[in-house]
Image (cartoon, rainbow, N blue to C red; front, side, top):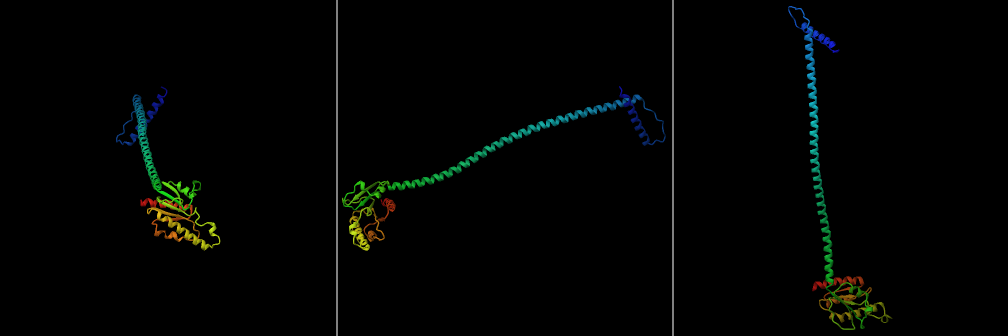
Length: 284
């Protein structure tokens, strides 16, 4: 080959220099004449060196290939391991997320049920109280008395009576002085608003004090006529508008009637009658 001669010369020079260095470094009492190495020995040495380099290169290549293979295998193993870990993490995360959603849902439902139960329970309790009160009203009878000597036709029924009749009492009767009947209602109403105890003609030529005195007398007379007809367990309600004066005859009802009340407006009349119904129900 073309490159063999320079390579041989280079090897010979290299070997010669090494030999010279060794010769100088090693003292010898008796110098010996140097012998030139034979070309065949140099070639064999060079071949062995080249073979050594080739073997080293082959081993290096094999080692590097094994290293690369090991690295690739490590990456594959790590990839599989990370994939497994990721899958397990995702699974447990999803399970935890599902559990968290379930817990949150259960907690929300529990709190919502508690609020609804409390609210509905309160409303049911309020409704029950209303129904209980209405049940009481539905068990009470009302006698509505107007001290008129003439019978009162339905077209002439007072508006207050119509309100009470629509209130839902068990029975509401309108009575007048045209017939003498015994009051049997749980609540007896004496209407002195829709019946004039004093005619306008009687008020002429009288002072305000005289008219007030006359009204006091007429109220007392009317009360005396009916108190004995009221059941002892009934409640008497006097509906009257006395103006500025106070009717003493009503204050003295406590001497003959155990339970009584008074009202001077339609609204107060409705409230007093309903309250009297509760009292009457309690006495039954």
